[in-house]
Structures are given as structure tokens and as C-alpha cells.
Image (tube, rainbow, N blue to C red; front, side):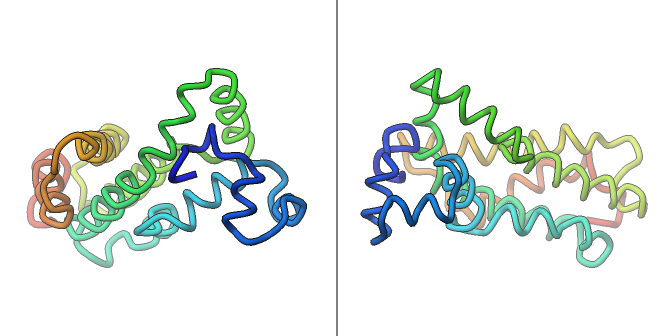
Length: 183
């Protein structure tokens, strides 16, 4: 999937690369989309989904800034690693519609990262650590959009080092987001 993209990689090729039969692959995954979701959730750098799912419980435990830097670092790694694999699905409209429907049916998809981050920011808002007038959904879109653009541009030209870039992105968001003294 990383070499050819999700749309072009066949389950036969995936099974061969995994060293198993196609039948065994379907024993563990009911459809190719389930395999794709598993790869994106479990095999890409930074374990973005797992980190974000647990982030709401971290509200109030570390600084908002540090939590957001961790999110940005993981998102930068995730988008860099998965960009070419994921973008290939847009080239085949019928396949895209099938994957989109399957992801929505499973409660998965790219919208989930925004939802999880916004939920965390709302939890911090309730604790008074994020400004009451802040917009958690917009903040999530801005952060993930910047990380995705970094991955996109990285396909063309060298991009800033991810750890420093993550911190820079977060510092640009903080003034409109964090209550004074709670960075």
C-alpha cells in the first residue's frame, strides 16, 4: 500500500508481502478497507489515533502546549508516512466512494482526529485552561491542516525538521487558544 497506494494495491499483493495467503488475510479483515484502517491506526509512526483517543483523559495533567506539541509531532509523522498511500484513493472515484462509505460505517476516517483533538480542547476549556471564547474545532482544523500541508510540501521540497516545526505550529495557535498562564 505504501508503494502503490491503497487503490492500486491488491489483497493478493498485500498477502504476499505479509507472507500469508489471501484467505488468511480475509480471515482477519472482512474487507480491504478494514486492512487500510488498521494500517493507518496501528502501523504508521506516532500512533496518532491511539494518542488522540486517550488525550481527553490527559486534560489538566500536562500543559496544553506540551499536549499539542505531542499531537503535532505525531500528526507530522503520520501524514508524512501515510500521504502517498492515502492520496491514491482519490484517483479512482468509485473506489473512493466505497472507501468513504466503509470508513463512515465503521466510525473511522480523517474527521476523527479533528473530533478527538477538539474534545480534548473542550475538556481543557471546562478546566479553564483554554479560553472560553476559543474555537476547539477550528484549532483542530488549523493544527492538522498545517501538518497535512507539511506532508504535502515534503513531497516536493525539503521541509523543516518535524520536532521544531511541531513546536512552532503550536506556538502560533496558543495565543488564541490558551488561557493566560496555562500554556
